[in-house]
Image (cartoon, rainbow, N blue to C red):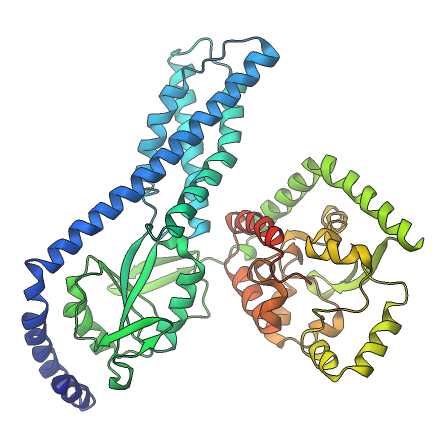
Amino acid sequence: MELVSKRAARRKKGSDCLLENMEISDHMIGESVRAHRSHGHHASAIHFEYRRLYNAIALVLGDIFSLTAVFLITGSLRAYFLGEPFFQWWGELILPIWLLGAFAARLYPGWGLGAVEELKRQTVTLFAVFSFSAVLLFWFQLGTDTSRFALTFSFVLSLFVVPAIRRVVKSLLIQSGQYGLPVVIYGAGSNGRDLVDHLENEKGLGYQPIAFLDDHPSYWGANIKGIPVLGDTNLVLPEAQIAILAINNVDPEYRRFLLEGPLSYYRNVILIPDLQDLPTLWVGTIDMGGTLGLKISLNLADPLSRLLKRSFDLAATTLTSMFWVPLVGLIAGLIWMQDRQNPFFLQKRIGQKGTEFQTWKFRTMMPDAEAVLQKALAEDPALKEEWERDFKLKNDPRINRLGHLLRKCSLDEIPQLFNVLKGQMSLVGPRPLPAYHSEELDTRIQSMRMRVSPGMTGMWQVSGRSDVGTNGMEQYDSYYIRNWSIWLDIVILVRTLSAVTRSSGAY
C-alpha cells in the first residue's frame, strides 16, 4: 500500500519518476506475480483451456444437431411430396466442411464476438460451405442424384436453424455460469463502470469481469457494480487470462508502461479508448507509418447500402404479407366492433429529410381520447409530470379494452407495414416521432435521425423501450445510425420478437 501511494505521488512529477515507478513495478511483479507462475498462473491456464474446450464442444454438438435436423427435414419433405429417397448422403459431406469452416471463422467458442459479428460470420460461413459442397457434388459429379432444390432449401433453412440453436446453447451455458472466461478491468472510473454495464447486457461476448484494479486508494476494498477493487494497477491477477485497460484519460507514457509491465503477463489485452462517440462495429485498424489509425465505415452514407436496406425491407414485407395482411383485417374488425369507430389511427410523424408523413396504427384509445387526457392531467400533477417528461403514460387513461393487449404485444403497430411498403418507413430504424417530440431532442440528434428512414422497431425498442426514456432513445438511435449494417437489422428484428414476448417496456 505504501509503495503504491509513493508511486502514485511520484508519477505526477514527470517522466524520470515514471521510469522509477516502472522499476518498483517490476520489483512488485517479481515478488507477487512470478510467485504465482509456478502454480496459480499455470492452474489458471489449464482452467482456461478446459473452459475453451467445454464451450467449443457444446457449440459443436449444437451445430451438429442443427444441421442434422435440417437434413432430416429436407429428406422428409422430399420423401413425402416427391417420393424421392429420404436419406441425404451429401449431408455427411457438408457437416465436416461446416465444422472446419466454423473453426476457421473462430465461431468455437466464439468469445469476444458480438451478436452482429457472430451472425455475419455464421451466414458467410454457411454460404461458403454450401457453395463449396455444391461445387464438389456437381463439378466433380460426386452425386448425380443430388437435388439442387434440396441443397438450396437446406441452405436457406440452415440460415434460420443454426443461429437459433446456437443461441439456445449459448443461453444455457450463460445461465449455468459456464460460458466465457474471467477478465480483469484496469480502471474503476466511468469507463470501467460503463464497460461492466455493457458486458452485463452482452453476456454472449463471454467476458466475465471478476475484479477491478485502480490507482485510487479510496477504491481499494470496495465493490463497484458488484465487482471488488483488489488493488492498484501494478498488480496482476493470475485467475484472468484477459485484461481490459479502461482507465480514463490515461497518460500515453503510463499506458506504455502498463502494456510493457503488468499487462504483458496476460494472454490478451483489450484497450478501451476515450472515443465513446465513434462507431464501434465497423472500425478497422491501419498502420500509418508506425502510427495507429482507425478507419471508420459509415455504411448508411453508401448509396448501395441504402439500396440493400430498402430491398431487404421490401422482400421481408412482401414475403410475409400472407400472414400480416389477414391479421390486420381481423384486428381491425375487432376494434370496430367495440365502438363502431374507425379502427385505424393516423398521425403525422417526422420522416427522412424532415418530411412529414402519416403513420398507420391500430386505434387503441377511446374516441374522445384527447378530452380524457386533458382531464386526467389537470387532476393528477404526477401524471402531468410524467407526460411532460416522456410524452407517454404507463397507466394511460385513454386506452380502450382491446388497446391494452395490442400495446402489450406491440400488435398496434402492424399497420405500419403499409408505410414500409410505401417507402416512408423501414422495418428497423429510429422510432418515428411527432413534431412536438422531435423538437425536444438535441439538434445534433434531430439532424442525425433525419438522414435515415424511421423504423417500426429499433435499438431503443429492444433495449427497454419506454423504460429507458428519451435520453436512452437518443443514445440508441445514435448508435444504430453510426453502426448500421444488414446484420444489425436482422439481430434487432430477432431481439424484437424476444422483447415483445416479454412485453419489455411496453405500455
